[in-house]
Image (cartoon, rainbow, N blue to C red):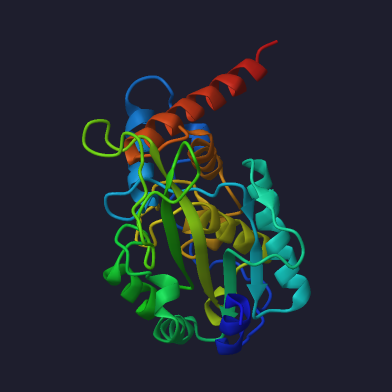
Length: 302
């Protein structure tokens, strides 16, 4: 049985209702257009944004998709599921990824349920090895997995990544059942493993239908795109920034992917071909933000 069929059988379906305006508005967040490029202000904000958003496994780099992304959505009406899958695929295409063909095996699985906490718990209880393979560094560990199971968040997600040989594209660590260990040029303390990169292997996302009733489908699709394409910290505090990640705290103030979100994804997918550390992501993101502001300024000249 495929993952999507298994988890669909566990889910209790509830269609989200119509979008409703937010009752309260949070204080204005830092929008990309308001950032002063010169001086240290932008550099500090960029570092803070990366620190709050990024969540790689311990001692591993930031992972990203390589090649194709196949999005599977279950638990809601077919037309709504198709809209979300198509939207994420379009965003992925913008960053050089190949959308999966019809009938492909999902490596981004999104399940809608009436009770997201109960479903998350049941998924881990029944198929724990799908979430945690027993090899260190592929995921964020048992504490984060417990958070996936028992938190009350409207959306919960779980990323599994794999260290990969940047030269050959082969898995760079010994997996369960392997009879021999792979050899990777330069792995170790001397050059800090720069010949190893981290590739996303699967993302499992559970959406609590009851808690997303006040959110529009386009907004939700952008939110799911962000957490499907990057290892986002579910506990990160992004309230100071204009980002789609604030959607459930401020639905009215999160119309879609923002300049910060786009720049973050662009930095992730245009960065070095080897392992990406938080510091690498900060530098690349800072460079992209400065280039974006320079283009805006140039476009305003006569």
